[in-house]
Length: 272
Length: 309
Image (cartoon, rainbow over the protein chains, first blue to last red):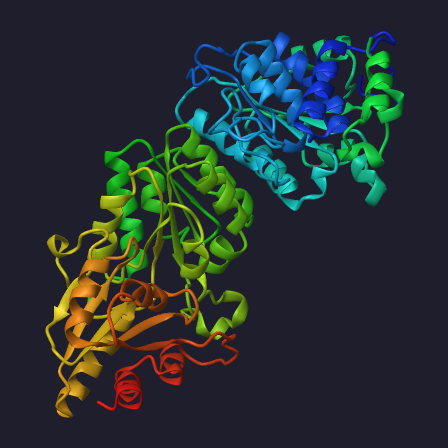
């Protein structure tokens, strides 16, 4: 925790959520579309949130007491879909229809189609500001709902991310928790990018964790106070794009590539 | 003409409606902060001067709507409609969320400030978005009436608040969202005006009457949905139509009138509007109206040059 230069080690050296990773790959192959490495980068975070943090009800996705999870980096949506499927928001048939005519699941989430999806994200730099409005709205109404938003580090090139950080801090939206998927995509283009220093400069309660480690998730999320008026928290999760399959890890051709039969076998072997 | 500015009426309406409706929330981008203080005091916790960050303010408005509140987002037109266009498009419109955008400084109302503070393509931009309602309330009564009629419906509604007025005091009963008003009967040509340009249309009607040309005048305060029935009834009678608007020629009310009247054979059309080019000059609002022919004499001259009337 809080060690900017700590290497991403994973949860005790183990790869978490292999089943969800395999499902992501199967969906991409069946749908012939999708961003596997971006989803692998965040699937452990999203899985921990749905499994241990979020108070949501798949039988009533619009439950007015629920926690909100806004996936701002919409191209990571496969990580959201497999968790919505695991917890019963969407069906086997929905998953089978990924990117198909008539299906509800596309390469970016659509909140008017997908139960449990809180935003139609995809254009980077929107979801955080939208989540700030959701947090403010709940405070105005005297509601205690907690608001989580996941943004990418590449997405953090967008100026609106910092507009939102600025205004949320000044409005003291303490019930808001941002998670940054710090897989260093952004640093490929703009290498001078000390995200923890930036968030601290904006006055946020800033935590840095291993984004593939359940113990770090527990420590970080348990520490957030979620006060209706207080300093908001950002959890900067150090992640690996494509985490779990060496062939997919890093920044390269796999960003939006569909595995062929041979590659599929290698990936599944790594995730067995 | 009302002594009260339409912008002041905006503030007064927020105060009145805000005291009746606990779901009304007003967020501004450091504009009209002073005139909205009565609302801020009367409705604590529902007024935000968010800062100079229009795209985020727009997304925040959509987030407020997501929680069931009725947001009013307000600042200068180019920064809301042009800079934050994608936020309007995706966060409000694609999400199918309700809300209200109140702009000042549309067209060349801030004439002296130059291009950065002009916004005369707003109708065109907004009309590309599914479900957006566009109004142009140009007297205090029009603003108060249209806002109360539309602010709580299921759509995103834009209120283009002008810096000047047309001088006709319609009553609240005469104002109906989505319905135009026939201001004067005529048989030879239809003058369709929106915003303060109703003043030019009525002035031109007098000039034309001196030439023996009898002009019918329609006033449109709701750009979308357009009262096509009123337009069709008038133009099918006169066969000649001039649309007068402080908007670019492309994508303005004129284009909608052309589309609405496409089934009529032989209709002659002319547009008194802003050419599809930047307004690069300084001077007053009135100077610009004169330069662009958005004045009684200019409209009358257009009728003569285009229709030989």
